[in-house]
Image (cartoon, rainbow, N blue to C red; front, side):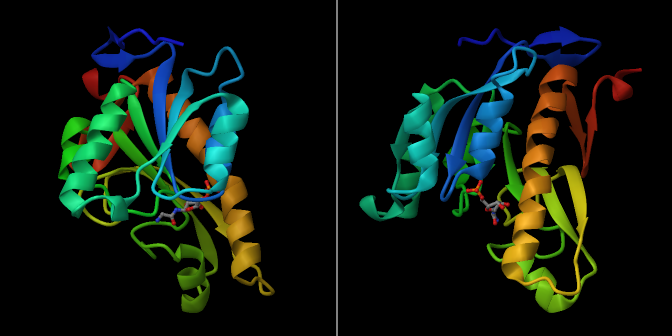
Length: 221
Ligand code: GAR
């Protein structure tokens, strides 16, 4: 289970088996996709912990079934948001993650968590950012009338869904779509994208320059 620190090859850090700490608030379908991907011995990452911001959610059931460390960190149990943020940073640091993966975690992360893992927190969002940030991406896309929807994986920064984009996937909007059917189509593509993006990150390494992310050694030549 213990991953080695990243080996530096051609200027980028490459990991043999990276440790993923997953943050979730809901059903955990992205979490499940990551766990299933990591059953393959050549997948370069594995989920070592699951942290939610609410009790009784599907992501916790998945963690239990899989024997993965899980815990709940409820904002309302702390005197203020800063105390919650600091405790969340402390808890996550215990997992020694190579990457924190926000997979449907419906709270903004604060400065303590961001500072603990600089550039090492990613999020998956169910719209083609920068369009339709927030927690109702597919509904907002449908109401706007777009013909192409999709999902985005990005590096988390202090803003709401504003970080550097790592990957995007597009799906069509059909004439008879409602919010549920569009969300389902997006989520099928989103799960594959999240698994593939993390796979590429830890097989090839990644670099961020300004607003742009690059994989592999393209920039070191
Ligand atoms: C995902 O579709 C993700 O894009 C969305 O929550 C869903 C979680 O599903 N996240 C956001 O809207 C964050 N802004 P899951 O719990 O089944 O993985």
